[in-house]
Image 1 (cartoon, rainbow, N blue to C red):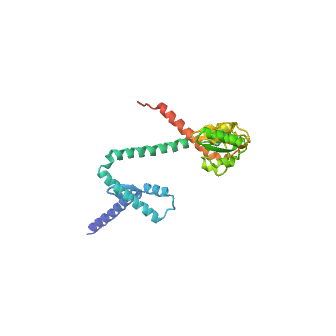
Image 2 (image 1 turned 60 degrees about the vertical axis):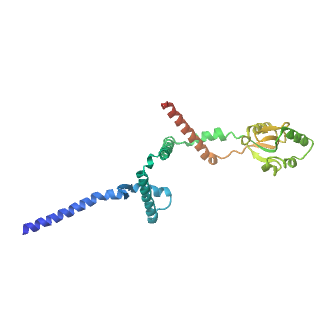
Image 3 (image 1 turned 135 degrees about the vertical axis):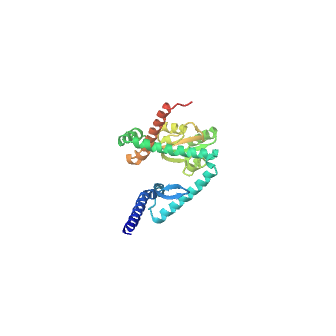
Length: 263
């Protein structure tokens, strides 16, 4: 009797120990998944990444809402796969292009992390591209359809007519309301023929011949010329960084193209 009771006690202890061991072994697997849908796991890491992407402080309500959304997506995805939609040519194309886009974005991030733009490079770019300064012009213009109209206006101005009054009929309605004034600007801001004309002109000078652009015919008078205000390094550093990053990516693309075997 004593022996039988002892065996039963040992058996119960062994069963309890085995159950505890199984529970400990299963705990990490459960913690790794936030849900299992039809045998397919949704990892807790996936849930955490989605929450991080939202950019809001995590709360139990938010966590539960995202979890339910992931479960719904998984259910719908499984149904789409069951219907064979992944083999549809249009769907397959979209999946392929989405995959390419994600990988290209990851490559861009990786390349810029490997080869970051340095402060020295930014300073050099600033001196080369911005530090030179340049000229700004304060110009007025009258835009008309034909060269004949423009020539007639030039003659009227030479005879003493008011530029501002004649500019009221300019096709450029934006500047017409201001007497044809375009304000202070770098000549590079204008279309090439206009820019070339104002670069050659002096303060107070009127174009002797009309200037043609894709907008029509211009009569131009330069009201003033001054040295361009040099922007601070800090104000243009973000744009310079973006430009240098684009140069890096284009260089990477060229190197990879040269190595690639394309038939």
